[in-house]
Image (cartoon, rainbow, N blue to C red; front, side, top):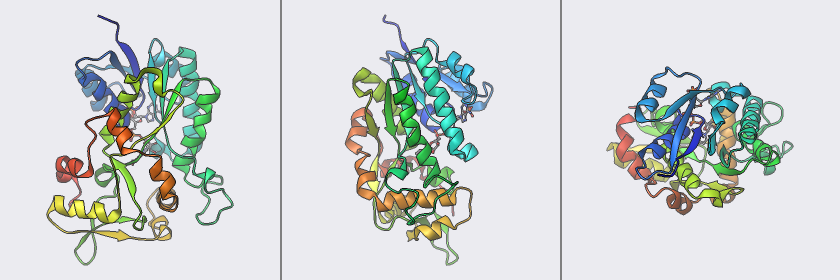
Length: 316
Ligand SMILES: NC(=O)c1ccc[n+]([C@@H]2O[C@H](COP(=O)([O-])OP(=O)(O)OC[C@H]3O[C@@H](n4cnc5c(N)ncnc54)[C@H](OP(=O)(O)O)[C@@H]3O)[C@@H](O)[C@H]2O)c1
């Protein structure tokens, strides 16, 4: 039997990295095995991964030596940061730098960097259509990830740049689910006009990442954008209506209104949706459903995702 190649998965207890670990370990013919990185070996999710067959190891993105140890002897690594834990683009950049350094030192053959666009390439800071945030960003949680791409390239890390999309799971976990208006009707609120929003089941991101590793060196140096479907707010509301058996409306607000909603990250997300709306052709063009399905034949549509998840949506 040929030796299995180890993939070190950052964020293994989370959505993206977890999907990758489960995809690797579910593959009966696998040439790969999963090393799951976490800061807390004793969490329920870490324990679950170990039971599933992952080699669970301790690592912290803020401690480069721990990353070097966790990457040692691996063939590849899946690298992701969690902006929403700290809301700091500088921290994301520092963590990406640590991962790129550790990957280089470990001599990894293939790294996937889970990234997003540096929106400043299209909306420079002096473009007043949306406010500049934190002094030098338009969409902080996008811009720092995009800025970090160059770190991997400059360090000569053999990297595939993975452009992810809006998780439909945000309707469950991120407070974006249908909410009941004072008049009693349910509605989702998005500042997207009638433009399409590429979305994906979060679990499919890891499955697609596994597809990228399985292609060998073919996708190194390439940018791969994922989506399960591109849907308008109206189309998503119609699908939610069908799934819930109760009308869900699409509440199309302006980006200004969205930015002022007051929850942590509202300005960042308001700018993000505005970027997706105003540069819709570029944003959608970078996320290809057929490419994603080629990497992951089980890729879900929104209706398929809803069939599995409607009962988990907030009750409004
Ligand atoms: N929500 C969306 O629609 C969407 C769409 C595209 C991209 N994204 C991006 O996805 C990223 C989050 O990924 P996710 O959703 O897969 O994460 P998640 O489910 O929120 O889980 C976060 C993961 O990051 C790990 N982590 C965080 N800080 C760490 C550190 N210092 N050292 C080691 N591990 C650390 C956690 O591991 P432990 O706690 O076990 O250590 C956990 O596994 C965000 O940056 C976001 O911008 C989100």
